[in-house]
Length: 182
Image 1: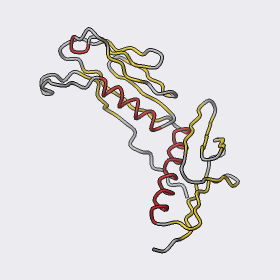
Image 2: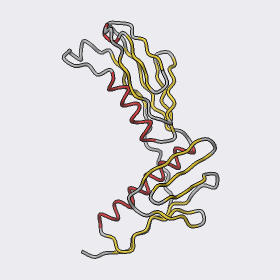
Image 3: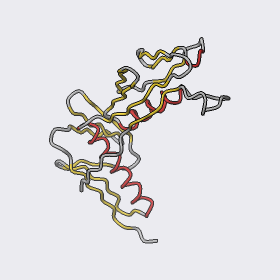
Image 4: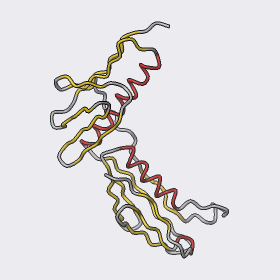
C-alpha cells in the first residue's frame, strides 16, 4: 500500500468569516454561525481552507473529501439557508400543531389526549403556514434532523397505514446544491 500526499483546497467567499480553534471550524456570515468538529487537521491560508495529510492512505483520502464536502455544505448554508417542508395530514381527527421554545407540540393526534412533542435543534427556525411546516437553518444536518424529529413524532404503530394516513410528512427537502469548489 503506497502512502501519498493528500490535499483538498477549498476557496472561501470573501463575506464569510472563519475561525479555526484546534479541530473546531467556525464560520459566520452576519448573524448566522455554523460550527463543526472535524477529525482531521484543517488550516487556513489567505482565502483558502486546506485539508492536508502528508502520508495518507486510501481511507485518509476518502475522509479528506468527506470533510471538504462538509465544509462546502457549511459555506452553502451560510450563503442560502437549507429549507425542508412538511405537510400536516389529518384525515380522522383534526390535529393542532404549534411551536413552543424548543419543541413542536402536536395535540389531538388520532384522538390522543396526551400531546406529542418533536425536538427543535438550536439554530433551526420552524414556522407553520396553514398545513405546511417550514424548517430553515444554515446547518444542513440540524435542519434535516429537526424535520426527521417532527416526522417521527407522528409515527403510527399497530395500525394499518393504508387507512390511518394521519401524520406529518416531509414533502420537500434540499437536494444537495452542487457547487464545485477547487
